[in-house]
Image 1 (cartoon, one colour):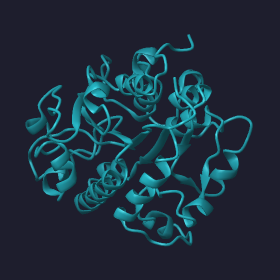
Image 2 (tube, rainbow, N blue to C red):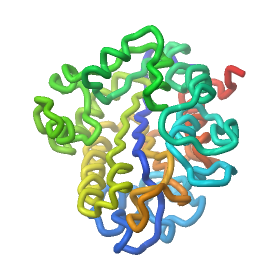
Image 3 (spheres, rainbow, N blue to C red):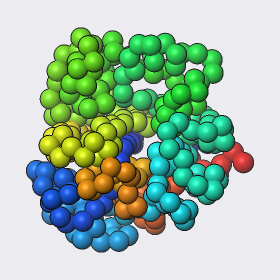
Image 4 (cartoon, one colour):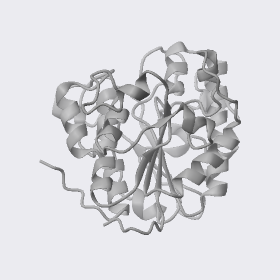
Length: 319
C-alpha cells in the first residue's frame, strides 16, 4: 500500500500512436530519426520489431526493460484510442468489454470503467499523491472543474478526473510546473497562446522535478499520433527526437523515479498508411525494480496492473 513517504514514484509517459514497426527507414521514422537515448535504454537496439523481437525483454544491466505489448488484446480489427487508453489506465480488457475497438471519446460503458477502476483514483484512495503534468487551456480547464466530467474528454483525462485531484493550467506551465503536450509549447504558441518556448531537455528536467513529489505522475503526448495520421515524415522525426531529449533529461534527473513509457496503438511507426496499425507497442520500463515491474507483461492491461503492484496496491477491480 502507498505510504505517506514517497520512496520511488512512477512517471507514466503515455505516447499516443507509437508502435513497433519494420526496419524500413522509408516508412518508419523510428529508424531514420536520431534517437540515442531510447536506443541506449534498449540495449543498443532500435524500437522496431526486427531489433526487439516479439515479447522480448531487454536483459537487466543493458538499460531499460522493454516489453512488447499486444494492443488488440484478442479482439479483431485495428486498435483504437478509447479502448486502448482505457485498458492502459484501468488494467481491464476494454476491447473485450466492448466487443470491438472504440476510437475517439469513451462510450458510456468505457466511462463507467474509467471512473470506477482508474489507476489514478485507486492510488489516491490509498493515500498516494497523483498528478497530471499536462496543462489544460481555457475553456477546457474550467470545464474540468465541474462536478461531473464533460462528455467530450479523452480516456486519459477521464481516468485522471476519477481521482478528483486538481488539473494543471497554463499558469502552471508559465511557472515551470507543467509540460505542454509537445514538450516545447510550440503547438500552444501556434494556436495563439502566449507561452514561453522551452527545449525538450528543459521539459524533461521539469517533469523529473515535479514527479519526485508524487507517487504517480501522468504525462501524455499525442502529437505522435497526429504526425502519423498526417503521414508527415519531418514532423514525426522532430517529435520523436524531442521525446528522446525529454527522456534523456528525465532519466538524468530522476534516479529514484520509475519511468514507464508506453502507447495505446501503433501509427507513427508506419507512415505508408494514414490509419492506426496492428503492430505491437513498446512498454519501456526504467528505474527501480524495472525487471520485476515489467515481468509478464503481454498486453495493454498489464501496464496498469504492474504499476499498481509496484505501488503496493491490490490489482482487484471494483467489480
